[in-house]
Length: 156
Image (cartoon, rainbow, N blue to C red; front, side):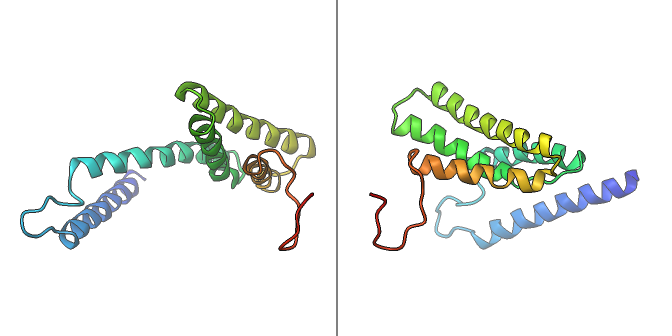
């Protein structure tokens, strides 16, 4: 088993090294310009944006290990980002309080999903996929009920 694990890890590292080498060659700058791909700023940017996927992967692994499947984490991440960003930019909240509100929105989605799943003995798939979409709809409409209107109609 350890030999298979080593082969998998080495093949993953080999593919990563190949990708880095390919893009370093393909994006090679000319005439003394700095390299647009192989630089410290780009490396930090890759680490910054891949961290959220690593955190989400840990949560998804827990759900999969427990025998379920859940499509909601991406929507919940988006919803909490909209809540935190909206409060920080439009509401002029502090960074700490807007981030806390975003985390509370994500926790509320989780609790709502658990309240749907536990009593009905559903799998995680049908219950948790619709919850974030409905909450995202309410946030986007600033709490106003979203209706199915035909083009040109208004809700008033």
